Image 1 (cartoon, rainbow, N blue to C red):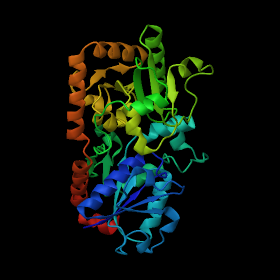
Image 2 (image 1 turned 180 degrees about the horizontal axis):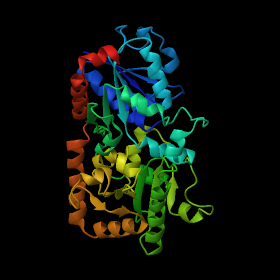
Image 3 (image 1 turned 90 degrees about the horizontal axis):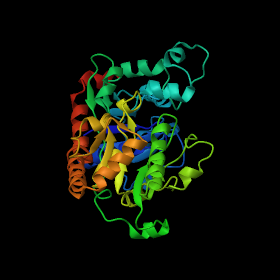
Image 4 (image 1 turned 30 degrees about the horizontal axis):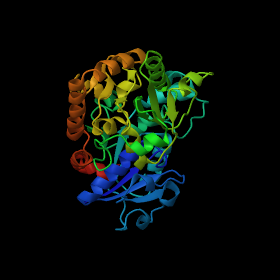
Length: 389
């Protein structure tokens, strides 16, 4: 069995930490020794549940491997969770300490993320000799070189293959949903009372952060709720997550009247919030952001057994419309309103979508099954990678 070190670009409050936590746990159940390294911060993942892996901060990794693995041996595999610059620099430090097989995970269009955050086209950033790039984003030149040193690359969506160096082994790695936490259940009556939600209210629940790349999409949920309410179907958006940009406009009173924003909540409480939903909706459309990602909330949406509405991009390209999800070319405010009313008045359709969502979750969003496939991918890496990475 192997020593496997996952390298996070942020602490465990990042959405990506849910994926790393579960893959590290599942690989540990199989018999591997697993550990997760992260830059710094106070969140060490206790809120995600049982940890079968060790946790270590970057500065604590200095060649004393007992701090990382109980068997006092170095890593055989280092799985860098995205090619962000702080991850790259840490992996360079590791290279000076021991040989290992480097695997890099891609879960976003890193070039677009860089453009959106820095406000300049990627080509300009890549040709800049004076710009100081933040370490929590991918460096426009270094990240490509970093990918070129990988023994293998995991990608969350097949579309990300365009960023994988030619000839590099690659594996499409989907996340999962914890079936002990996310499963069909009745609405949490206690939470409804706490939130003072009227019994006849149509509820749309969204668990996710808002940032510059998805601000327009998330805003459409609030607009849909306002339109539905105005037209006689009282609707409320119950949302969790952090806002990293203003997205409702300077006068957001209209949105606040049709929403309850709970902010950041403990991961173990997310299922309680999702249980309130009549529909679970991923807003958006096919674009340079959505085409390359798998929204982290979607496995949990499907596992809750509610009708799911998705755009015809990422996961929406793999489900059967009207059976496993309701698929729209563009999930915007008008599309949401029409879909919700169509499904709501057809009990047989709503039931079919709920049952189909569960089947899709069981088939595709299984942590154990997906971790086994990841283990098999590790085993296909050329032996030389373990010596030269």
